[in-house]
Length: 100
Image 1 (tube, rainbow, N blue to C red):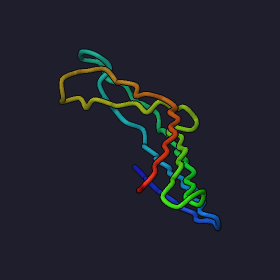
Image 2 (tube, one colour):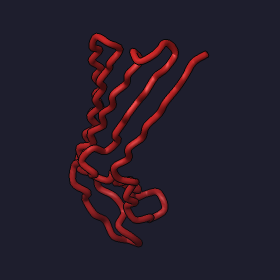
Image 3 (tube, one colour):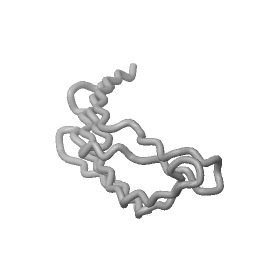
Image 4 (cartoon, rainbow, N blue to C red):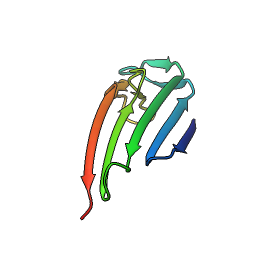
């Protein structure tokens, strides 16, 4: 597993952030008494934060799983025999905050 997070700040209250999550190939359960190797995955996130519009106002636009890889949650062999579960894929969020 490798996780990195980067933040770049620009004039005018703009910030750009990026995150990378790399998971190596994993062995896990594929149903009762079966096993499977899931390939390595690369999950990319990005976001733009703007704080320079008005004092106290923040606008944040973020995208999780930019390439829609759908992170796979792998159950180890010894933990119940559940199949690999795909997690939600790409997610876009917009947040507006005003601090009084």
